[in-house]
Amino acid sequence: MNIVVLVKQVPDTSAERRLNPADNTLDRASVDAVINEIDEFAIEEGLRLKEAHGGEVTILTVGPERATESIRKALSMGADKAVHVSDPAIHGSDAIQTAKIIAKALGTLEYDVVIAGSEATDTRVSVVPALIAEALSVPQLSHARKVTIEGSTLTIERLSESGYDVVQAPLPAVISVVEKINEPRYPSFKGIMAAKSKPVQTLTVADLGLGADEVGLANATTQVVSFEVAPSRQKGEIVKDEGDGGVKIADFLASRKLI
Amino acid sequence: MAEVLILVDAADGAVRKSTLELLTAARSIGEPGAVVIGKPGTAAAVKGTLAEYGAAKVYVAESDEFDDFLVAPKAEVLASVVAQASPAAVLVSSTPEHKEVAARLAFKIGSGVLTDAVTVNPDASVVQSIFGGAVTVQSKVSKGIPVITVRANSVAPSPAPGAGEEVAVPVEMSEAAKAAKVVDRVVEAKGSRPALTDASVIVSGGRGVGGAENFKIIEALADSLGAAVGASRAATDAGWVPHKMQVGQTGVTVSPQLYIAVGISGAIQHRAGMQTSKTIVAINKDPEAPIFELADFGVVGDLFTVAPQLTEELTKRKG
Image (cartoon, rainbow over all chains, first blue to last red; front, top):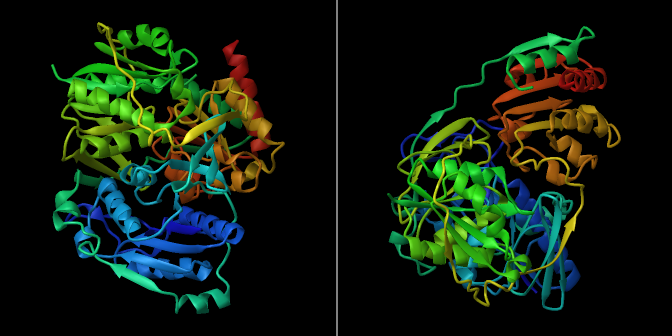
């Protein structure tokens, strides 16, 4: 089975994240970059599917040169090889453009299952897996908390507000997985060493047959017009409980007409 | 006047509050047309409410088949209504499913999609709150008809009568859209509390709650306020409550009128999901807990005495 896992490099969520005032895009340079947390669950799920059904796990990343760090980490967890779409022309691409780039890159690969994390912690748009399914005209099985494959049928438990929906589709399909679907493994020392020699293919926009006018900030379908740092919340009244803490909260809620 | 389409979110014969918020937001851009996609009878049950909140037209796309599918067929049907109506914008709720419908719609019609808008302006540009509320951005769709998903509780719904003229929409689903099929829907929790995403009051418990059994303290407080129950990552990681209740960076993002954080320290992970709540109240035994930096009112104390006292007090005041 050919398994492709989509991995995004994002700014560390514990750092103070910023937009770049020059072009209102994400400032990736000023903070530490890490693998998108939920993508580690996607990688783990890919490795488990390989262990159960055989085949190969390929990591696919779209991102600047620096994203190789995240690719190496994914390879050190046990993925077999990687494709890195890297091109300055991609800078500033929005969700739809990114999905088109990923769909084109998938077109250069053999795939039965494409696995993504359900959202990236930087943009939190959470629709790229659905867009890739749309672009490729393959089934979309997103927000999975459980994935099983029997023969050529893929079944997931999709998280819903009241529980879960069991959704089924034939392969090939695009899956997105939620946090807690599994317990991602830590790279072993052996895995880290092996990752250094695993093949990483680098592709440009031209390699994918996309025109420079289809990607990047200037051609994006959405635009950030301006931004400002949100004023920090005014610190409110903090009291020590003297045996009447609950009553005091009720008084506060009443004063704000919240009860 | 330009038409603005909104996608109706209805369940059990009633529209969700987020749909009324969409109608209210749509009225600032143009004349709302409400699109009902669901099984037969859905529109008849909700048409009155849609008209009451300003729907000039109610597009009805009904088929028994919709229960068997999630996103893809709805995006196709919505695209056909867009082709018919040529609206100035399309507004959709920011639920996971409807965000995906919005994205696939935008792809089909060659537009851009903006997600999680907290304000929709009359020119269909939006305000978004990013990086867990730390940065506010003004954005716009620069190609095609703007497709916008609006975060729940961003707009106060207000009625304004509309004609509610019914327009039948032929339902056509491609084979590709029907490839992913819902074979079962499993309800895990009893549904007496409001859903986390559109609740106007949320009570959340964290590490300080100390165990699954103790969550009944949180639930009792929530029930005294008619609130939804949420949790921090520490509580879901520990397995005390299901992941779907997690508020924060990798869970649900909420923006209620009132958010009560009980036994939650307020790590950045959690703050990212609730920072834009209108009023925040915190109960924590650690006076240094970062949650107090956000709180409009905070009590430093033992949640096991403060929370039950608050529940009792609220019940008493309700009479």
